Length: 113
Image (tube, rainbow, N blue to C red; front, side, top):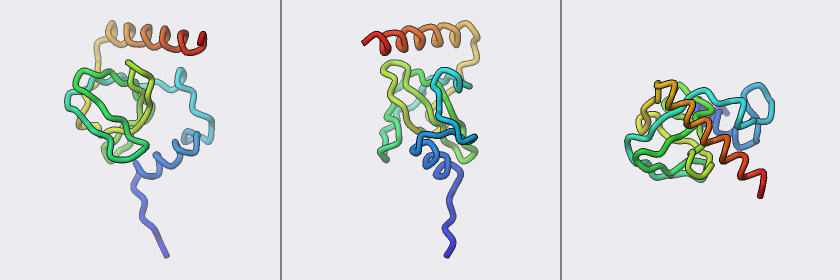
């Protein structure tokens, strides 16, 4: 009995178990690879997905070849999966730095609560 699992399903299971691909616990500050802006609204269909509105900024942790990102919405820190087609990569270094600074402030507020 063989079950075919697509790459995004495998990555989602690994994430749900709280580990990255190397078997290490995921650290939200060290794994940031990409920042995207949402260009199309997306409504989550699964519990591990992230609902998004146009102009949301998301810090991406994983990119899976079958068209999915895993990331954290900057405005509230909620994390989940969403389709790549809803997002546009932010390539301006100044914008990325500004978003990282905002994320740092949010992390500081979280730890001070």
